[in-house]
Length: 258
Image (tube, rainbow, N blue to C red; front, side, top):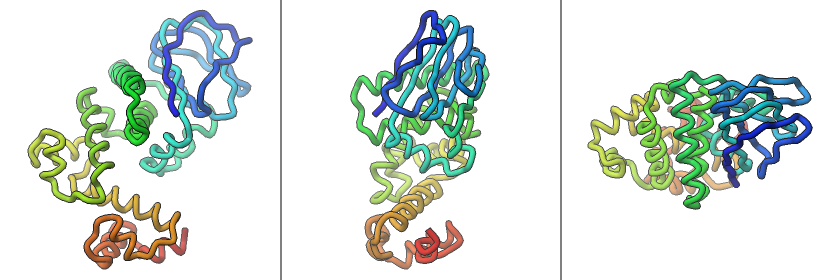
């Protein structure tokens, strides 16, 4: 479902880059030359991240001393799309695009990629890899302004928090529970979440619950009562009031419109 490899060497445009999966990202660490597509040629520069559409054939021309070639399946990509619903994110792979990271941002991206290689080799589960990929794409595409100011260690803490949240958001509501999982006290956790997401724990948690509710309302025929039970609400009325407060419309109206 995901493949990440280092590439280097002298390349000529008569040879296409092969990828295991259809969605691809090329991250340049040190190179000179061109990325060549039917739409044109693009300069290879350090810190440049290319987001490559599925149908595009990629050729390189020049010398690559160090670069990362990442490909992944739509299943892993779906988590990124769920977390990033704006048009800029949805269109990231519609045509070839790229982002240029400054030196500090690029070094963080390289560190994340090296850690991702280790996670892939360790055969981490799909849900964890999906969270990691979503974090990496959000950071390297400069889609999450808050993430850009975080250190590598803090980005790893974001990933750890997301992994805990994904496992327990339906059953656990207390700040103390998530703080213990992060090895922090409640005040420190909320301070970290404010820095990373501009939200405290209850806001992050309910945003995740509402996102899951949207998926259930759209893709299942479950009643409101059953959805409320799945999401850990003791009463359907509590779920409905939280949904309307967050979305501005009732759960039933949301289902009807979608």
